Length: 157
Length: 157
DNA sequence: GCACTATTACTCGGATAGTACGTGTCCGAGTGGGCCCGG
DNA sequence: CCGGGCCCACTCGGACACGTACTATCCGAGTAATAGTGC
Image 1 (cartoon, rainbow over the protein chains, first blue to last red):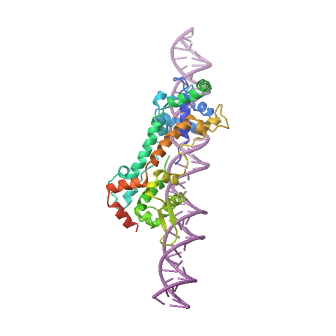
Image 2: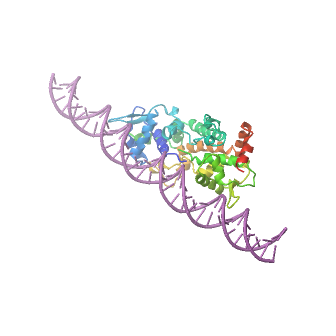
Image 3: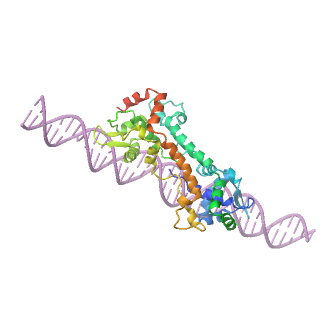
């Protein structure tokens, strides 16, 4: 069970973008060079964020990516879901259907006790992610390093 | 981010084994045919459970797998960790090291704010898994289908 | 000086290879039971 | 009848292919700024 490292890239990028002027778009190449990331691959992940409405992409000169809405309304769950997709990590294959007494018309993803237990845990995970926003992260970073906003802002200019 | 389906197999198998006599071992082939699973592949996962001490394996005639300890002391987290490994789904690659002001001697897996936020969520997930045991699942199943214990017991004889 | 237009450089976007991990399978080592033989 | 030893079938365990999903890259479509031109 491995999460795409694109999630890490996406989160850092969103925080960085939250320090720029809301109207200004930053090209993927600029965002990538901050962490020495492969530009094209980061771009691929940013496209996913754009499809989810987290970012807004603009083509042409002076184009690039900018935040699609207020950082306080972008949860970590939003970003993770945009990159990883909406499916749960634990997929109930409903093996009870192939077992004794298995009914083809029953949705064991809901009725199977084990499936329920695993879904309960994943719900706790998703809840914890949904409780934290990009704005929360940004605020914590600023408290630890007050120079970060201006430095990042200058770097992405 | 996809969890191995071996987790599902392992959990069902552990519950089934909890209904058999503690002293009796059940071969992997018998355990597999209950859900029409590929024997060799299930066996591979059961080996992992045995290495973790969740199951005890016995070779030779009348051999097989049996629970290594009381079902009440086997948490879902134990099983998941045995199959999936101890690593977190989110692996901080410490991209801050390659960013501006990155220090090579700093462990950003602990200091990075984003890493901390993701770890917080995974901790919630692990906690939820650790709160549920094989005995809990077994009890719920028995309440819904009182015939399950004896039926399974007979099937694995 | 100003408006319009054609050019041009810039950016995203999806289509295309490479790689690692999860999936699936097989055969050999080891073990315990059961049968045979002798006492 | 009983004990011991040998044989054999059974089971796990690790080593070996296959498929899928993540990683990485490239080139083309579209766009907006810009420079040039005519009025």
